[in-house]
Length: 125
Image 1 (cartoon, helix red, strand yellow):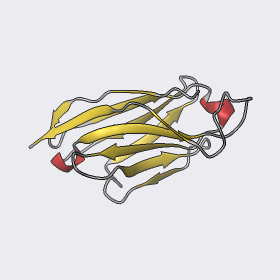
Image 2: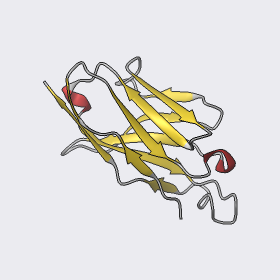
Image 3: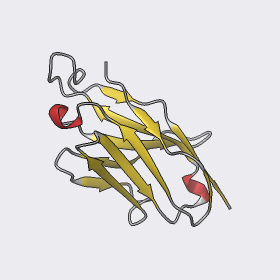
Image 4: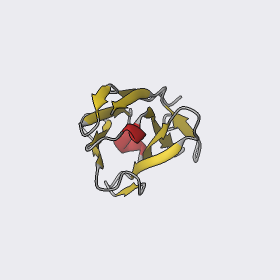
């Protein structure tokens, strides 16, 4: 119903940078709130940053000042620029939107979470 696709995961050294991308069809029309989550092995999935359709962002304390989330309406993508990466940032990163109920199902059910399949980020020390 709502298909999300992440890309950009890779193996990088500590201190390096990486940019993740998530394709979010009909982003502007659907007015999604979009977030990145991550899940490290053996740990719970955790919120990283979120962005509303106006571009206002909220960041987890653990990434504040290092990660920047942006959206590109024309490309229907959200990006996560990750800088000063640490081994603790190693995780599977997921894109998530909250359905808004617009467009007769196009934008998913209101309040329902929709997830991509994730992209793997590994930071070596």
